[in-house]
Image 1 (spheres, rainbow, N blue to C red):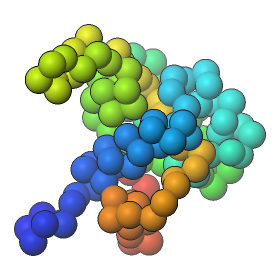
Image 2: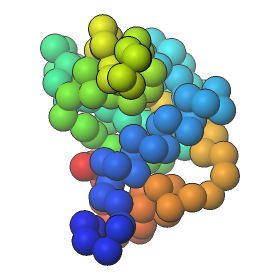
Image 3: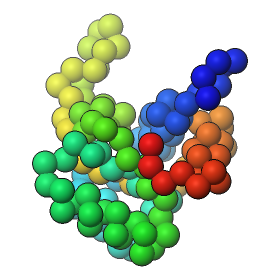
Length: 130
């Protein structure tokens, strides 16, 4: 989806996660995310594939599938940690001391925007993961 100013899925996901952090509707970390998934209070789950324990990945995938919760996988847990605010921002605006995050869950999207449209379009096309 590059070209003419359109954003790709990862850019859209980053913006959506940042908006959720601002609105206080994102849950970070494995334990809290699983609680939200189990209660069926999640609209979207983001899972880092670089997690050390592969059973965690299988567990999250199974819960999302069982409760029909949308799942997007990204490659790096540090990247997910930065996107959900688990870092310090220096004077230049660069992320420092980023903490890894294996899983994040969004419980409410907030206002409609281009990033959200890109994510919804991804799932309409049958996309399960990035």
